[in-house]
Length: 273
Image (cartoon, helix red, strand yellow):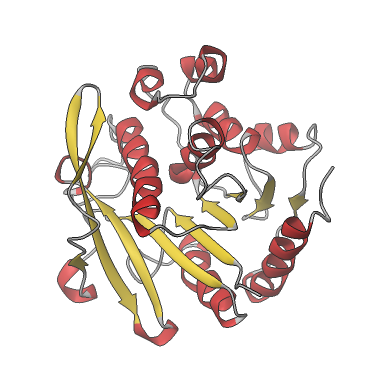
């Protein structure tokens, strides 16, 4: 029997970014899932605050070299990799000079959200999928963590649904207490559009605020996990109207067992509605 393959798409992973609820999950969940006998791949953005020298990141030439077109502009996709030796775990980094070569993560030095966060999230999520295609690796589970990863479910369900690498994958979205406050540029609708997407699929991006961006991720996921004890009240209320599997919040020391069981049941169809 082949190993279950789990793709982790994470907004934050420690030690590359400071410890937080999300970055600790990004660090220890993949390790625990791997130790349970599953095969993993882990991705995060190569934010400018990630110290390449200290973390011994290096470019993977065979995976780099593709250009992603956003707003009629070519943006080179650079793939780097680092290793967390104690976890025997590799992390793939999505990088680009225009979007990630700055000292901060999602806010500038005045704690203002970057104006191009819409393009940055489009680039990151498309970059992850294109890199997985290059790896020719077929995930059974795609588990996304944080709003910055929320377009991955949308792309998988609307553009890559008939790609053999993703057609059978179950997509899980973990929701955290990490809202952004500034509504993104509605032009994101044209920036993220790809073949397979219909006008009705894109209408929600007329108002790309935190709720609508999260709703897109939820609606295009097969299951939801509560990553924080408390989340955005509007999102919480929306979840209560849905008929899809929702795993409640578990503390750090419980997540590996609980999430692994959740993956297994989802793949076995035990949670099908």
